Image (tube, rainbow, N blue to C red; front, side, top):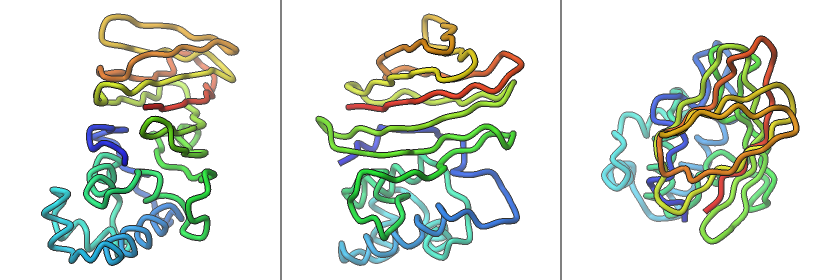
Length: 200
């Protein structure tokens, strides 16, 4: 089960506001509703267990509201499932491949795509990320035992940790404990693409 402290982001919505209804929000809607019912929980009971308001849950299940990744973490923990189980297409069941955009920045080229998730000691996730020039992804500390493993495919990625700032060029990588505030930044003039493994 994904620990409730495994927080992808407290402030970023799953996708920015848009006139189009992203498919991942449809997946979230169907998955939350079916998992809640399978667990024999009312919306009120899930709201209490997750600390998410009933109004928000109603909106999530109807697919009418955007939702933060942190809120999805809390709902997943209350349901006893992994974060990935909420965003994967329902038709895939428990296959590892997900391939869904789960975070987007201010610019269209900036996004985090959860490629796959598989059990590790607790959980492992494979992401493909891209950041447009000037864009930043901020994350809050994870619980102890979580690691981020990053491989830069294109451009130069700036990683800001609690006590150091690193520049990782294309072809380079870095592994760090993510029980600290950290951010991924594109301080250059070209698109940055990187692969991110999140492991516990």
